[in-house]
Structure formats: structure tokens, C-alpha cells
Image 1: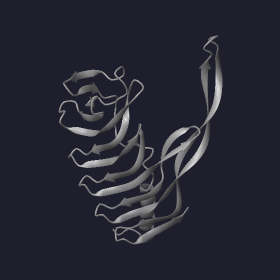
Image 2 (image 1 turned 120 degrees about the vertical axis):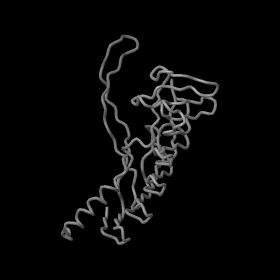
Image 3 (image 1 turned 60 degrees about the vertical axis):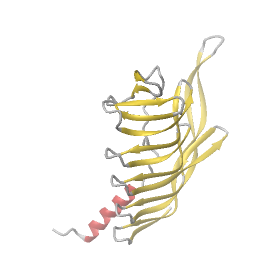
Image 4 (image 1 turned 180 degrees about the vertical axis):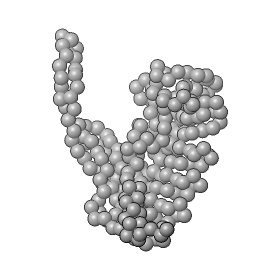
Length: 225
């Protein structure tokens, strides 16, 4: 049965719009390591220390403290690399820093990008299982009086599996203020009291003209933000 043309186009546009949502809320590349206290040491050799991965009983995190690199591997088959990249010491543990890569089960790259002390930064790409590009986007590094942040900002593109463009537009890192309350203890008296403070939060916001294409390369929809 041939679908109603109007209904079909409506469903297609809804699908395209949903597909162009930012990946910022997702865990881009898994690490699964916090500290030696939180991650059980499984085994070690001259260059690597293998820890049980937090939240993933089938994986282990291999830390190379000399080269400051990590590999998230299959616990039974340590040659099966799930993700890998650079790290830097922070507190009692490490955070991702530098180039990091996530792989499909077939060994091809799934996601690739840079981290800045645990935060995504710079150009990022995601790929289909056959190695063709799926998404490309960018994280800006932002600094204000509250600290350093990263947020999706700049050009965003999504592609069909044959390489044709599917959606294209721009994101702006939108600064907002949020208020939080926490309980603090007086170091002298030991008295506890609630303290309210505000901090910056950056969220990606669509700006300018966004275009959505069908698989024939035709613009199906335009959005003005």
C-alpha cells in the first residue's frame, strides 16, 4: 500500500528534525574509571594496570601511567578494544584528555574527538558501522568567572549512509545562570548551614537557518531560528 504523500513527508520531516538533536547530552566516549579506591585492580604487568570498569562487568580499564593513556577492553579478551585515548591525573584518579576514540564491534571507529580534562572540546565526528561519516560537530572552550566550560557550538552536519547531507545548521553556546543550595560545615564550630550559590551553565542552542534534506538531495524543510 502506497503511503499518503502528505503524511509520509510529515513523518520524514519529524524524523529529520529529531535526528539533528545535539549529542552533548550523551556519553560520547566511555572511560569507566574514577580511582584506585573505586575501581578494583584485576591484574598488572610492566606497563599496564587493569581495573574493573565501573558500571560494566564485562569490561576492564587498562591504565598506562607512564604514557598517560587508557584502553577500555573486553575483560575476557583484552585484545578487544572498546575505546581508548589520552588521560591526565585529576585528584585521586584520571580523566580523559587529548584524542579519544570509540570503536564498533567490527573494529571500525564509531566516535572520535578531543577531551580537555574530562570535557569534550574541538572537532568531533561519528561514523556508521561501515566507516562512513554520520555526524560532524564542534565543542567550543568557554571561560568565565566561574571556570572553564565546553559546549557544542558552531557547524553541525548529519549525513546519510551514502554520504549525502541529511541536516545542516549552526549551534550557539548559550550561557545561563543556575542557582544551587548545599550544606556546608563551619570548620571551627562544626555547625552546619545551608548556602546558596549561582554558577554558569552552557547549553547548545540552534541559530540561523537549519536545512533538512531527503535522500535525493532535495531540501525538505528549512527552519529559521
